[in-house]
Length: 187
View: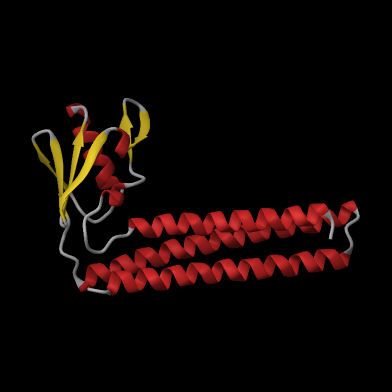
């Protein structure tokens, strides 16, 4: 196998693993129980014209299992933070209390749990699409390498290897979904 083929296989593996890693982070944000500051991870706030992570403009704490307190370092940031949290569509609404926002998590009903499972399933499907896009891109590169003198047999071997990697990573996304579904549906 040529170095370019090995490099394509390595590129494929790296890109697919990063898609799975991104999925893990996305699924980690879906919570069905105890309040956690990580529920607000990834929310960007308009901080004087710059999109900034919420954690960079406010203190986020959880006084108990059903509440999150967001206390901005500047009072003027209350409204932009409120808008950013609402825009994130996380299923809860912040309430203004003086110089902070209080988020009371709604009780997690059976309906809400099913909704969270649907959200998790959508994240998994997005990851699968990303993995398949990586596969398509790498296979296109392999087919173009035929013009550079790579043999048909080597192209077939590399394509088979790419398919095996793709199947393995798609299976790992499905395993992550099964675990997350169990976590969400357990009371």
